[in-house]
Amino acid sequence: MRVGIGYDVHPLVVGRRCILGGVDIAHEKGLAGHSDADVLMHAICDAVLGALGLGDIGQFFPNTDPRWKDAPSRVFLEEAARQVAQRGGKIINVDATLIAQAPKVGPHVPAMKNNLAKALGISPDVIGIKATTNEGLGFIGRGEGIAAMAVAAVELGN
Image 1: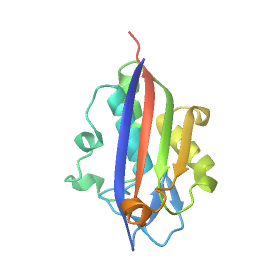
Image 2: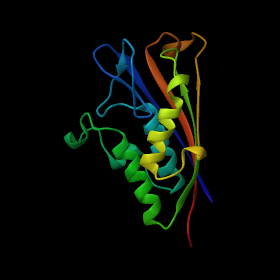
Image 3: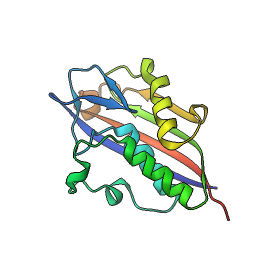
């Protein structure tokens, strides 16, 4: 059994869509980044890659590579799951927390879990997603960005 942890943060800006867990959430600001900037998927991708002892999302999908410009982060998760399968492993579970002052995430959690499950090839039942605010503190509390943390457990075959 192997465990990995992931963290990601992106600034909120006007003129971008707010994609979280593969769900396009109506909000006056969206996440800036080279890809679709889905902090939840990025953190989970790093957690899965970390459980394998591999690098982070930036090593697999560098933001200097034009192929990944505005790419859906689902592609990154699919590759992380492929890396697990290539090693004869299985993703056991994923647990993640979104940290955002806004938008409200709760109503979107079921759709997020389904999107994540599909990309990772696992059941939505083994994915936990929680959301919290930053109690008005710091850049997150001021609505300047969104962060996500995730852990993933992976069982590797012998």
